[in-house]
Picture 1 (tube, chains in turn green, blue):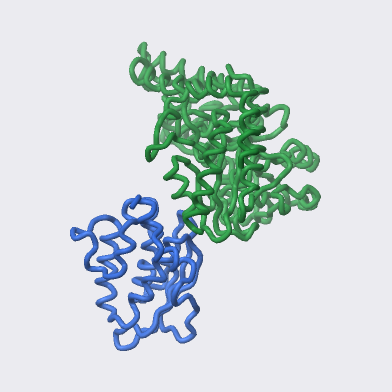
Picture 2 (cartoon, each protein chain N blue to C red; picture 1 turned 45 degrees about the horizontal axis):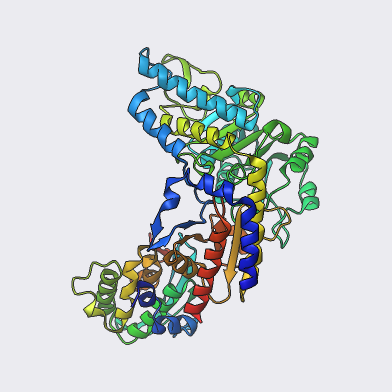
Length: 420
Length: 148
């Protein structure tokens, strides 16, 4: 243990300045929980918010609150401008060609459901096949199962190996004339695997098959360029990207979005309504029925402003250091098995302890101020694949520190003590 | 005693390690499955009910220490009780676990050792899963019981 702390000190010196500086931007990180400093390692569930995001919400509700796209008055113009400015920030963040390709949704789940219903029901037929991987979140499984039931399509699954990596040859073997859509995660929420989506997209496009990428766990850890990836759809949630809950983004290639029917009917998504016929609005509004989460969209824009000012090369190096140090520290603990040992990983360390259920681990860690997630992580097929009922998951963000990894390890030793 | 020590008392850890009546019952005339969708805890309860009396009760499943210990203690407590008494005990245990028992859980006998759970709201469902399940079995409910 002593040797490990020494290693921690020397590693920390290299990056402590930046970490302490960014930590000061997140007010919640100063909290104490059960009398101990909060060690927030549940970033995979949701991330904390920098002061800039919190301020943007306050500013909106104190000085801009109004409905968008319809008022002729001053406030409505302010709110519309702020909301549309956020859309432009997201476009730049993803390097999409046009703001028309950025659809505001509630989150990744709604984005995937939108594609399943609007693209799926419009373009797929009975007997067609949709391909997902064995490490998807339920939100990238269930919408496709619902679609399959509705139209008689079939869901096929790319297997993963024991490290939690896509078996690429098996993926390529799944293609046939009935393969109509691939929907795959960019980073696994339960295992942390970084999926080689760029190569998978190229393989799918060689067969003329479009690809949706679930980026919920990827965008907090890496910069994503949708044109470079070549994906047809990309989905993510604001709240995992240091922004508010209840807002997320669906990027879709304009060419596909144009051909898709609307998702929901209502206000804002129309250009003309009569009882005889309704004309739909242009992109992106065609998919945005009803008053959206205006403050949330603006808050997400503020989160992207915040992230854009950071040095992402240094952040990537810091996160890599955190994850490899945590992997090393935890691997030292007797009876601890890490689930998800892919070569390329981001942000997630899932583990099981011999004879101790993840829920008990989670409760004891919480008493030490360490917040983790315990359970199946909305990825029950992944748990089945690894033959475990649940795991404990520590998930990191750039504001986490080496000392927090040490606190995690100490808390796990306490679990060992309680359970003997 | 700290909240954590109260939650994970020796007796509870012992029931977790060597659960009582942990077996499939071949001649069960009532069974029910319980499932906690939040964490994936899963339990099957077997009853042999005769003339309104629980002659035998056992369980199997996977779950955390609290859910396993609670199920184990439950089976030990229910053997020989009438269905009506079992239901009354279920009510009292539930009140104790949720912190709603005015007397702090005096009416539950040995099960009072689980009273520490009420300080951990996230764990109440773990402790009550087996009870919801046995209740479903007593009522002949064939749908899986959940803690929701």
